[in-house]
Length: 114
Length: 115
Image (cartoon, rainbow over all chains, first blue to last red; front, side, top):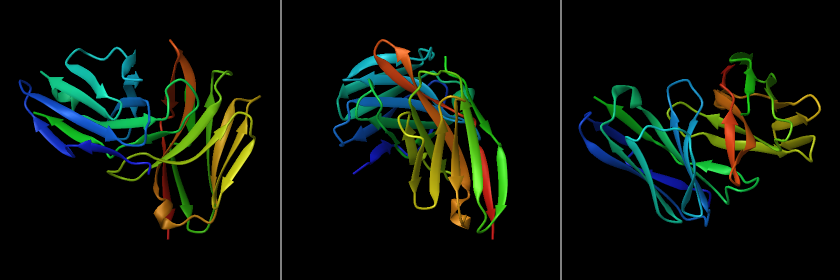
């Protein structure tokens, strides 16, 4: 089973709201990723967790706050977002983050900031 | 960091013809090269990948070739079908420090298969 799940599928939030995106995998993968994808663009890496520890933060603004409660779950907490943060947010996982392993993407959360 | 160039940005082919998409990369130490297919409104889906110890890999109608000397790799789709229409992204896995690897994506190729 190569499935990564994400909730919610769609999210509309105001600039003063606080919301969270959730990602889950049950493949025993130990690396999980958050990507941001704008329309007609490739995915852009935001964060990498390896063995539940943050290993890469690609200079993402602090209004995005990742959390990895356990090896199966990954959250992205959102606060005081801007309209330009509207995008598809993709979660991915791989067996590990320290070697050559396939990355599998979840279906994404389409976020609209009003 | 890694630099990945992908060409062409758009490609139209007649159903049944072949399609070829090419990517070049900059870091000679990179050693894993996946291809993703993304249909409109859906997730990127891994369709084929190749590691640096292999020059070519085939899976039914799709194949990937790798030239490490020239630092380029290509996706080949034969006998194209309308359901092959999508955006295709190449990617390169590179070492980003602190024991971690990350994918760098090409800008994508929009493939249209005309029935």
